[in-house]
Image (tube, rainbow, N blue to C red):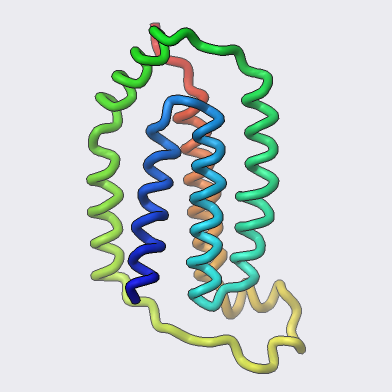
Length: 161
């Protein structure tokens, strides 16, 4: 239980650091760290298939694509960097509160029953397991993909002039 709380807290902290840091390469590293922590959480929740997908796609492939993209961008001056940092903190000051309140509401009102996979898992294919037995894992993957898309929008959105 304590390890789960530590993992969830570190997941929220690394996700916030990913969104709030001003350097793109740090954001990519933060996204990879968030993905690795989420992989450990999924594995602890008896979702090894979703954990493997998360680790290989989000922590691996997406990080490589983002690092490649960042390598093609131009450097920003220190003054512009400080100005962006101030604007970002002013713009997103409420984000940690929304994450904490949402997490508390979900933990209190969304009681998901715990169940294990049957021993006859070797007789089934991955599609039937994901869509029939582990549909909450698929929902989690969709949420992670949407969070990644919103993160990309926040990172690469041009400020209005």
